[in-house]
Length: 284
Image (cartoon, rainbow, N blue to C red; front, side, top):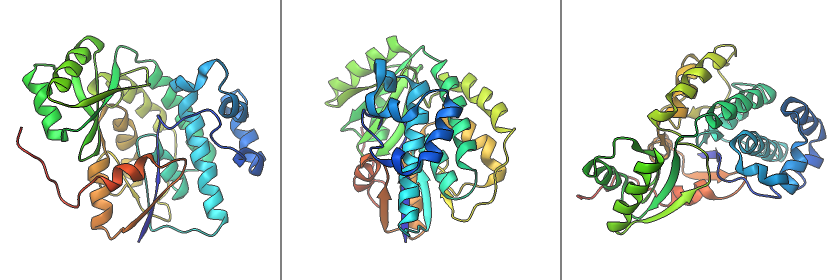
C-alpha cells in the first residue's frame, strides 16, 4: 500500500514551486486573489524575506504542496492513504476530497495569522536523544514552560516554549550530548502556550463543511484516521498539541502501508526512514 505525505512549515525556500505556477495558472491566480499578493512572485523571489514570516510561509507551502499533488494526480498516481505533518494535514484533507482547495487555503491563511499572533516563544530541533529522554531532561530541569512539540523520529524531536526557559533547556540538552538547532518560526508552536490561537481557530473551523472524502487520512495529532465529525477538535488541537509523526507513521505501517512518497521535498521521508517498527526507548 502507498501513502503520500505532505510537509508543513519549515520546508519553505526561495524558488519553491518552480514551473507549477505556470502549469496551474487558474489555481495560482485564485490563490493570489484570496491571499492578496502574487504568490508565485513570493515563492520565486522571497521579497523582504517574507517566507520567514508564518503569515506568508504557511499559505505558500500549502499551495506548493497542493499543486505538486495535482501534478501527481494528473500523471495518474493513486494512493491508499494520505498524511501530513501539521500544516500538511490540511493538504492531505484536500487530496482526500474532504475539503476543497480554496477552502483549505482560506483556513491556512487564518491559521497562519492566528499562530503568528503568539510570539512569546521559540522552537529548536533536538537530534540524538529519544523523545522520552528529552522529556526527562526537561522535567528534571523543572522547565514547565518548555514542551516537546514534534515527535518526528526516534532520534529527532522539536522542543518549544518560553524563550528564557528554552535557553536553559538548550543548555541542559547539549550537556547530555544532544545536537540542538534553531527552528525559524516566530512562536512556541504545538505547545500549550498556543492554546488561545487553537481556540480562535476552532471558531473559524465551525464555519466550514468537511466531507467524508474518498481516501483515508491519518491524523498527525492522534495517529488515528481522521473523521469529519472530529475536524474542529483535531485541526484546532493541532495548533497547541504535539505533532505525533512517529505515532502516525507506525499507524500507517500497521494499516499496511509499505511505501511513502512526499511532495515538496524529502523532509518527512527522511524522518520515516528513522522510525523503527516498534518503540525502542532507552532508559535515561
